[in-house]
Length: 180
Image 1: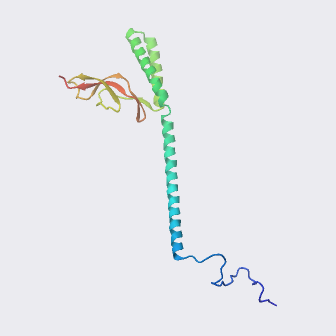
Image 2 (image 1 turned 90 degrees about the vertical axis):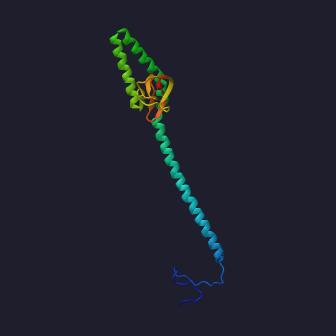
Image 3 (image 1 turned 30 degrees about the vertical axis):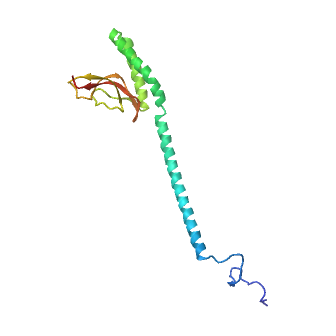
C-alpha cells in the first residue's frame, strides 16, 4: 500500500542528498572559510572594543557627574568670600571700638556662614607658619626675618579658601626672607 513515489512517512527523517544536486548553495572553499573566519574575528574584536569603550564612557560620565555635584557650590562660595572678608573686617573694627553686643552677634553670623560653607566642603586654608606653597598661597611680599626659616608664611593678608581639594581663592601672604 505504500507508494514508492510518495513522501516518506517520517517528516523528520532526512533524505540523502545527491552531492551533484544543487539547491542554490555552493560548497564553501577553504579560502572562503578562512576569509569568513577572519571577518568574524574582526567583527568580534570590534564588538568587544565598542563594549569596553562604552563601559569606559559610562564610568567617565559617572565620575564627571559626581565631580560636578561635589563642586557645584564652588562659584556661589567664591562669590561669598569677599562679603565674608568684609564681615570679618567689620567685626574687627567693632571689637576695637569696644561695642561688645554687636560684635558678639556679628561673630555668631560669621561662624554660621563658615559652618554653612564647611558643610558644603569649603574650608579656610591654614597659611601662617606653613611653608610657602604656590598652589595655596599668593605671595604679595617678602619679609626679612631671622625668626622663621626662609620661605615660611609669616603673615596672612587675605584668607584663602578651598573646596575639598581645589583652591577657590589662594591666601595672600607675606613670606619670610633671609635678612640683609
